[in-house]
Structure formats: C-alpha cells, structure tokens
Image (cartoon, rainbow, N blue to C red):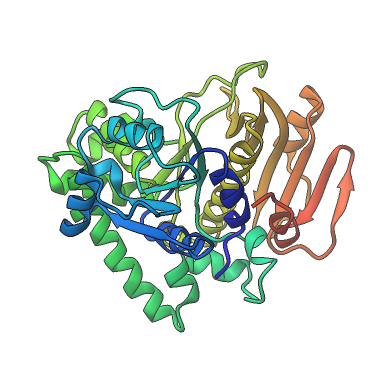
Length: 373
C-alpha cells in the first residue's frame, strides 16, 4: 500500500542521505525497496544477513549502484563513522537510504557527528489521514481494534491480526529488547510493559509501577527509555510554559501499536488519537524543519486537557477526546478561555458538529482525516 512520504523521500535523496526510522514491522524495508524501484541500479544490504555484512564491511557493492539501501546498519559497531566515510567518498550521483528500528537519539550516542549530511523521515503506522488517499475503505473502528501496522490492518480476519500481535509482542520482548541492551530481570521488564498497557491515557508514576514490580523507580524509567528507543511506546509530557500550576511531571504513555492498548474503547480511542497526533507533529517537523511536539495540560488541582499541539514552543491547539459526549468539556473551556487557546473537542460518535466560542466540537473521523499525515 502506498506510503504518503514516498515522494518527499525521493526528493530528499537528491540532496542528502535519508534515514527512515520507526517501529519494527511498520513497513520501512518495504518502503525502501519500493523507492529503490525508481533507480536503475539499487543495492539492498541488510546488516542482519551474514553475506550482506561482508559486502558492507568490505564496501564491495557494484560501483555503478545508484541507490545504496542499508537496513539495520545501526547494529554495526561504530556504524556512524562508517556511514560518514561512505557518504563523503561515494561516487557522484550515488544516493544512500538508511533504515532502522531504533530512535536517532540512540544513534547520536557515539561516533562523529553527521550533522548536515542527512534528512530523517519517521515512518509510523497507517493513519486515517494517510488512508484517505487510498481505496481501502478502512475506518476508525478498524484502526482502534487492529492498529495501523500493515499486516494486522490488512489481515483478512481479527484472528489473523491477533496472531500477528502475539508474535510481534514476543519478538519485541525476546529479540529486540534483549538485542538492544542486556537485561537481567526478563520477567520484570515484561511485567512493566504489561502494566503500561493498562495505564494508557493516565499519568504514569514510576514509583507506583516500581512498587508493583518490586524494582527501583530508576529501573522502571530505564525500561521505559528502552521501550521508547525501540518505538514500542511514546511519552506525552505535560506542558508547563506560561500555564500556571501545570506542574505535574508524570508523563502519559501510549503504544505505537493501538492493538496493545488494554482496556475499553475509551483507552483504545485515546491511544489511536495520540498516535495520529504524534504522526502529524513528527510529519510536520520532518517536512518543514520547524519544531512540533505533542504534550498535554494538567494543573495541580486536576484540571486536564488530553493533548496540546506545540509549535516552536507555543501551544497552537488544545484537544480533548471523547467517545460520545457532545457537551462541551469544562476543562477544555477553562484552558481555552483563560489562556486564549484554540480548542477542539474530538468526539467519536457525534450527531452534529458545532462551534462554541473558540472551540470546535468535531467528529473524530473528520478531524483525523484532516491531519498532515
């Protein structure tokens, strides 16, 4: 299925090398190979394959290669210095595309800087904004139950989607996490991940989870750092700048795979909204170079708005999500009026859209289809 970022990635390859990063099995390799079809001579090299590792280390790919695709290259020791050397000495007209399933902030921990040599495109699960340009006919209910990863989304039955998710979950825990860092308490890290599935949409206390799992809060934070680095979860932190008493520090945690969010439709809907809003913010950042973030608002006395879209350090929109409540949220109205903020209440099941003051109450599918990616 066509990915919306394809054309922009091809344009960017004409200027610099491009990194495609994102969760495991989100379609990075497929997209890289599809892009490779636009070039007469493409070399695809996966560092996980022994024969490809030898070609990579010895740099013995064909000299006439137009596009070099390196998959999972970040697993190579001192890969950044290697890639910098390849880029700085490559043949004229040659292009480099790199894919990986770990965040770039982990890439920056070692080796020389590659500043100015690459563009980043973060590939996330399919969203309604991306699917609206296809003939899939998929709706929000399908995204909520199956998530936007290609295989479960396209599966012929819910049973097939569930089988994929079980294998995906086991692969994350047993392979990706253990490859990323040596973990001595395998049972504890799996329990932390399972507890997070049941806390979607709620501020997460590291101390509370640590007490449940019988490890230290520092260990819980370390585990969540690993989950985040591997694109399993993402944190939405509270915005505090210029918002009086918005001092609660606990993040809310969501899953890139919506099917991993436990609980009822409310939790699944909020998780789907979070993934879509993050994809929108990251897409705007990757395309424009401006700084977009996703955060939330909460005061010390418990007034909360689910999400805030931040542009260059300032709130551009505050967003409250509801399953079926068309009545204006009191908290949304409070923040909108007090701080003169544009408010949007996104409702999954809504009979009629309307505007109350500076707040739009809008159907979820209409809102989601209007996002950037």
